[in-house]
Amino acid sequence: MFNSIAANCLLDFFVSMGLVIGGSLLGGVAALLTHHDPNTTMSTLASDLKVWAIVAALGGSMDVLRVIDRGVFGLHPGPMVRQFIYLVAAFLGCHVGYMLIHWLTAGREQP
Image (tube, rainbow, N blue to C red; front, side, top):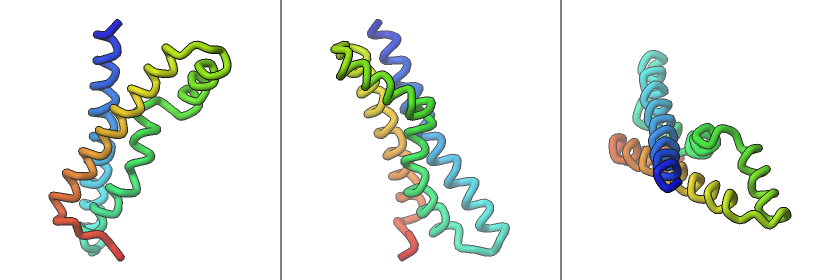
């Protein structure tokens, strides 16, 4: 069971990190093609994509809410704790992706 939880945590971590990094880098390419500053575009996109990366890594927010509902009102804390661990892994992944883009662009964000 632990092996499955660890595998899902790694998957959620890297999917959310990849969404932030990939979306920001491709947005930077689009900014180059449209004659905008790619650094500010990438930094802004990285901060905007964090929430969506978490939702996408978890496979949609409704399943997570359904599991939490069963955990709280059905007194089944095991699946609820597991979903919370997956949520933390996805959050850490998107934050690492954000920090990498922030470092790459030297923190240039639009005011």
